[in-house]
Length: 134
Image 1 (cartoon, rainbow, N blue to C red):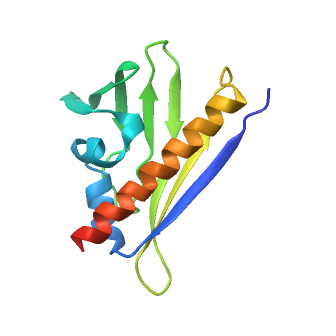
Image 2 (image 1 turned 90 degrees about the horizontal axis):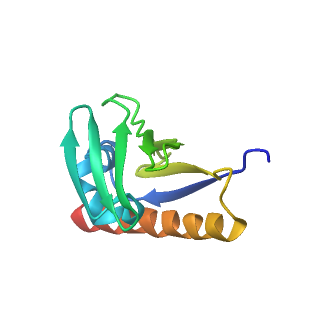
Image 3 (image 1 turned 180 degrees about the horizontal axis):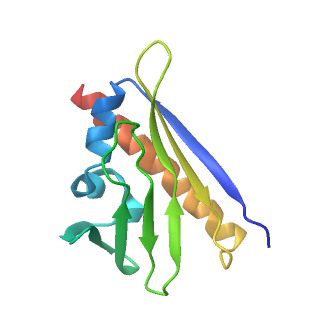
């Protein structure tokens, strides 16, 4: 099967550096990223994330001036899922947050659709938190 991906985005009426600062802090994930855990704890360079499916390991891209939030999720099966994730400065102000979701080889179309919907909800939650705080 060939790789299948979908890119999701959302506009946020907040400075992109503020969005990046909040979204890049893994300790904030339980507030908005439902797929990435109910709790997180540091484990060296990585994070251990407690999810409904069990414990996952997460590695974030190091802090950078480009607002790149790419991360790799290490599943209990040993599979690695890389998630490209960016915060861009939107023309005219605010931010555009972009996340690409790749369909994993053994994932059904129904499960992939469920993952897309979860990411949409997570991005909307991030938008609501950031705009309320601004």
